[in-house]
Length: 246
Image (cartoon, rainbow, N blue to C red; front, side, top):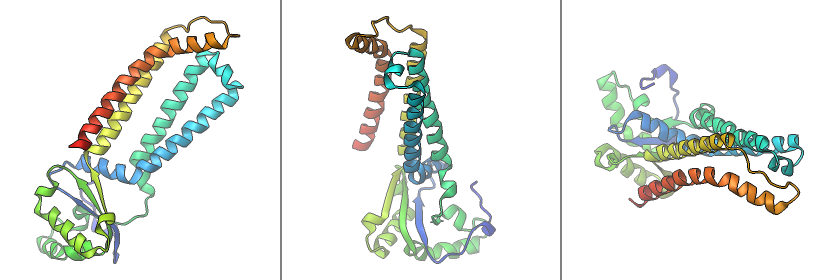
């Protein structure tokens, strides 16, 4: 929530991260940016581990990879298991992984008393001390960030007080988690289309004893849905590249 009771805060002499942000930026974008910074790596690791373990379990249950290749039903069972289940784990860790985080943060919305004007003024006067006693600075960057005097002041103080400000300042553009999640969402939609096309289209007949026929049958069967997957993937890449370029 935007308002946090002072009783829930702890007194410390230093913090791991000083969070610098523009108040013009919508709160939900900053929440997404924090989740991206804190949880993305763990979410990727968990999803990858679940993907590998699920695939191995299904392959072992089928008996061999060739058995899966000869069964369209098993192929799509594998497809669903290695897409939807790992992605569910990814989103759970992405949005909730920070609940187990033990790092300490200084965030003005919660650490500065917003109800007592006098205490708020004294806290803001001591802002350089809070910045100086932060190991790193996390910048939630949006287009209005460098237009805000307070944001530039925080960066200047941290650059002066930090031994290695270049390495200690972490920039997270607030658009980055939105791009990441939208790219994953497009992948999931494409995966659903692959599933839909595959289950509604019977696999081509072929001689199971011929590896060549098996190869071409598999190619023909998967080509249309993979083309459906390719378009959003290219679109997602181009949007990301354009953002980085600007």
